[in-house]
Length: 369
Image 1 (cartoon, rainbow, N blue to C red):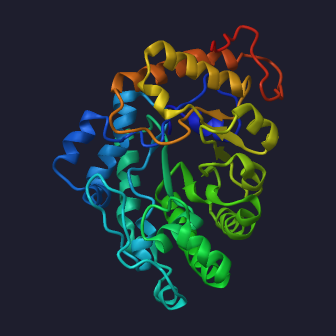
Image 2 (tube, rainbow, N blue to C red):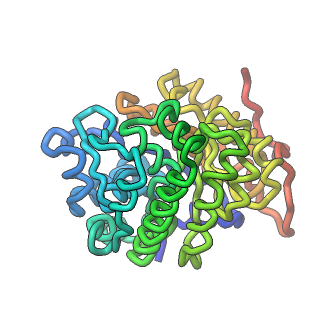
């Protein structure tokens, strides 16, 4: 039994007494406990050793007081299981020595049994839940289908999708074949995580945000929709994150997630209007604001709370990942501010209210510029 289920309640747009908060890459290298492990082990050893991965997963709950833990792993874990192994170098983005260039390479990729090829992830979830003992839910995750495909085609961090878009326009059938295999792999992988006890799952389809709405509808939406429709997700919310999502929000919502995670370039009040109550929203303070003085961090936290307004269905988060050189105390200030100040946006009422985007609690303090 969870002692703190506010995150899950907010995912399902149920009323909570304060806005729950967790932060993308919250177990990152700014925590001393993580740094101690980082000095002893390489990244993939941490990911593939359940006892170590569970420790890192639970650090933020123990040391920061966040309302959810996200599994310590990597987006590209399914690629290796499919047969295309990335190389991880310390403090550098992963690379694929042999990126996908033709149909023959795709035919060699498999749709793996996750419990045979990626069981370290499921064991990490089980151990994390045991270590947390109900103090917070555990979020499982994977890279999204377009993001995995883009990485495998580009061979490294897909800044502009150069090779991927060449394939998309010249040989769309080849890209669709890769996307279909990635989507089937992801579906099996997430279902295995849910079976292992993940309380929620998140699909990081970061690089589909580099697509136009038309291209997103053709090369990302069908595969994301197929994944979500085939998840065994009773009582397990699904979160979808796309960086650069402003023009894609309605399409993202149409794929069927319970929560849309919003980047820091997207206006949260407009996002709430566009989604129209179909999903909860997660986000979206600028992670770089956490380098500022405490007063500015508090101001920015209030601004995000004010943007969403009154009512349920908001999980506070950063719009992009935390950086490794952040002062830990600044992260704590943000969490404490959200826990305290967000109570103003969740008034205790006797009847159900459907607040509009941007609607404020009468006592809420507006963020000052």
